[in-house]
Amino acid sequence: MRKEKISILLFLLFSSPCFAERNNNLRDTLNDKVNVLIAYRLPGFDFSIHDAEEKGKSIDYQANVPLTLNASVNYKSFGISVSKELSSSEDESKLGNTKYTDIQLHYYLKRYGCELFYQKYQGYYLANFKDFGYVQTDPNSVRPDINTQNIGLNFIYLFKKDHSLNTLLNQSVRPNEFDWTFLLMSSFNHFKLESSRNLIPASEMIYYGDNSDYRGGKYTVFSLAPGFSIAKPLRKFYASAVCLVGFGVSGSENQFGNVTQKGIEAFGKINLKFGLGYSGKRVTTGIAATVDSLLPMKEKSELVFQTFSGYVDLFIGFRL
Image (cartoon, rainbow, N blue to C red; front, side, top):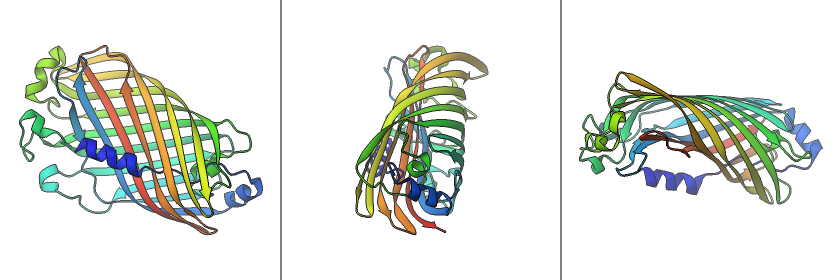
C-alpha cells in the first residue's frame, strides 16, 4: 500500500508553474495583484520504522487522509495557505479515521524567501499489517492513538539575479523559455510523534533490543539542501521541476516505554517538486505537488525512524 502511494505521488507530482520569468515588468505587474487558488488536495504524512541492521521488516504507518480543500491567497510578497478535510475518507471501518490540518505562510522577495508551516495528523493505520500476522481491522493495525505534528521554517535563496521567487513559487506566471537556475534551501523542522502504546509489532521486537518498546519522540532537525529548477513552456502551457538534495542534523528524544533516550543523528534531506498546467492572463489551472523526506545517514541506535510527506493538488487559480 505504501509503495503504491509513493508511486502515485511520484507519477503525479507537479510543482509550481512559475520558475523562470525574465520579463521584469510582467513580474512587477503581477505582484500588485491578488492571486487566489482553490485546490482539491491529496495530502500525506507517513513514517516508517526499521531496525538499524535491517534484519526485520519495515514498519510502515500511513494516514488515511480524507477529501481535503486547500485555499491559497497571495498578494505581493506575502501568501497564506490553509487546508482542511471536507468529508470522511474511504474505508474508515478498515483503516480508521485521520483528522488533518495544514496551515502555511510565506514571504518572498526577489531572491530571498521564507516559509512557515504547521501540520497535524491524528489517526494512522499499519499499511503492511499482513507482514506481522495482524488483521486489518484489529487494534494493532488501526491506531487512532497515533498523533504527529510538524512545525517547519524554510529559508530559500535564488542564485540568478534576473529571476524572482514570486514567479518561481506562487503559481502565477509561466516561463517564457526553457531555463534553469540553482537554489539553496535551509530548513528547521520540529517533528513530534506520540502514541499510547508500542509502535513495534510483537514479531519484530526481537530486532530492537532495549529499544523494542517505542512510543514515539520529538525530533528537531536542521538541514541544508542545494538544488536546481528547470522549466519548459509551450504556448500557454508549462512543465517544470525542482530538485533539492542535502543533509540535516537532528536532536532527538525517543520514548521507549517510560524511558526517554536523547541523541544526535544525521539525516539525508530530499525535496522534489514537479508541475504541469495552463497559465492564462486571468486564470491558471493544473496539477501541483511536492515530496519531502528525511532519510537516516548514520545509524547510531538500534531503531531507525524515517518520514515521508507531500501532497498532490488539482487546482484552479484567479488573478483579481
